[in-house]
Length: 240
Image 1 (tube, rainbow, N blue to C red):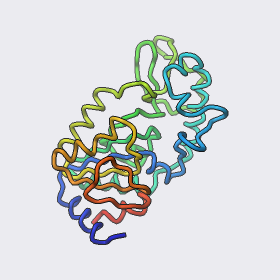
Image 2: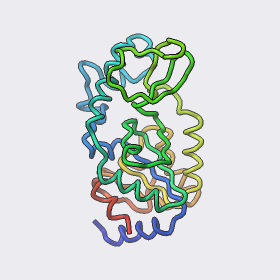
Image 3: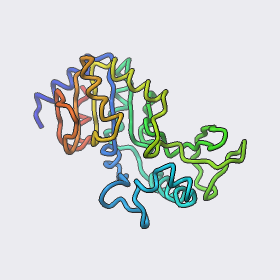
Image 4: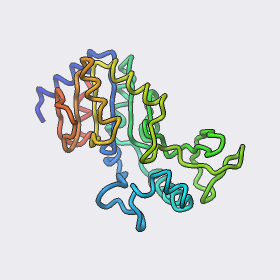
């Protein structure tokens, strides 16, 4: 690891009043959470891309819910890693800190971050298909297909599926954080899923210093600094 690069990023972080962080599956993988996509991503005979769609939920809600029940139980046994912990410390030291995550596992909140935009939702909330009420749900004794306690309509996981748009409040908050930040830190994301894949370019257009931390560099733009390796190894070095 280039110590000059580490020192430069550390200096930028120390002097920044506004920092925005974007995280992806890579930071959760270091806690042992599988990505559920791509090679090795089969559940029974299904691919994640086949289950995480409105059409799959419409046609086979029981199978989709069974997959989510399995994912929730699997993820409940995982804990935040050192990279998550560093982002909590960074939030306490930075007046204008925003964490945008593409992950739905809830590990950032479990670690202690407060100002989180869960861009793709979370496994730990449900949304009613009738009255659209969103509630936190951490029970493992839900029926296979849970129903709303108010209107009795079917519940769905409060996540963004393929083919669905990002919640407008979360999207606007993310864009605002990208425009305002002085340092934009990208951690463990493949940078292929929109709109998050464009956030670094937006931050750069507003003058932000772009830092990528990834096992394999993936940003669509050239960052100011690219630090190759595991987030849990690199992020602790960025704190003074």
